[in-house]
Length: 154
Image 1 (cartoon, rainbow, N blue to C red):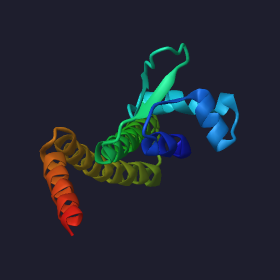
Image 2: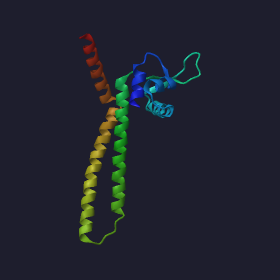
Image 3: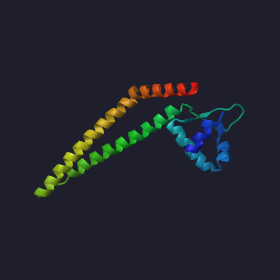
């Protein structure tokens, strides 16, 4: 997938699936599956090329945006996984019916620790929401672009 994105990113014109498989020496199925994934991520788009009925693709060349969108997607996925694990753990603990004093104490400790994890997960989700809302993203993007302009001047 990274190779497909790279070849499109570095290309000065849109490429067809055949162009990509020829350059990368991989199967058409592999190119097709991975190009669809890149489209879903929003880093590659299908474009029309006059005089051709083939599908052509080009990369989004805003590399900062591409990286940030992928990082945000991965972080949100992990935060959701953690939230689901905490909820299912609470559910499992609440379904235990024990009269044993040691087991009751262990369940109490587990619930306390899950509460701490839940608080941490909620704080992480809040921070992520701030980033996703653009506050931190705008600051980072401004700094990134400023640094690139300085490098270009050197």
